[in-house]
Image (cartoon, rainbow, N blue to C red; front, side, top):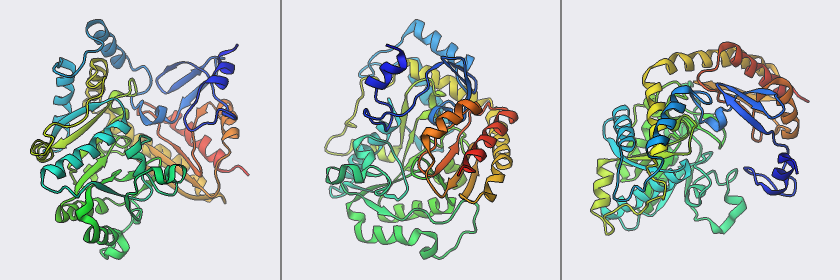
Length: 427
């Protein structure tokens, strides 16, 4: 049986049906921005393999770091043991993050990093004497992963709630941040969205452990870019009402939006931060949850003074080593010019879509480009088009978007933009 036939019969792919699984393409190799299929077809990976391969595929410095670590220590349990790559990665993270975010917990995926953050928040509130603060709040339009607690905080309409119903704990939601990135900021809380947050906290803060949000960019929940002043307002309200602020920078961290972290545009520091995806340059699944000393001390003062989580592959040396190499590439500074160039190229390349009748909006921020359509994209048609155009895109619903690797050339960015505009013009 051919690989693709076996795959179709036996393998589940993300959000797919085993009865009608949809088309897949067999990738044989990848290098830089390019994917090479088993039949020799080449496509630009305009998705950075779900936003993770920021430096492109198989970057020699990342490969070298993994090979060197593989020859020494592929894995060892993190309970009662430590190693150089784990310490080295924590040194790099603490040095690049805002002052105060300096207690690092490693896990094996972004969703788990969110779960850990939520546990931290509840345990910290218990340590602070707030036993009733066990719920969470978020803004509509968010996405925090597919694990159980994270799923309960995704958008209640477009997220997982409608599929799992009463099996998921009900959380608190405020409207999506209403003011677009780059728009004029209205001071009226009724217009800027902060009034809804204040009203929720005034009524329910004694039940809420933390408020979680994707700073600046709501990713899989809608690719919405919103005003940084909203984050500053939420920070102030969290402080006033004793709610811990959690930022999910799994998609936006490490340069994707044009600053090293999206929160920098708002000048806001959360109590807990979730990182992943580009942390390892897309080479391995790995994540980190970083807390403030205040959160760590509050947990230590609680009824369970230890953080109640410990994944088997926590602090995996291979992942830590390649993450160190990925952060070293960022420290070299080339990403800033690369992302600025991609942003300019996407603005040029996607501009023609604004005149198309089926287009609601075109948005570009850093190395993210979005065409928001009136109707959902025909995914079966997209698959065939990707082969012909040589550009791999993976739209969801009405959103046609790209997040190219930072190493994409102007010509490759132009090719991505042209492919997206052509899809947007389909009838």
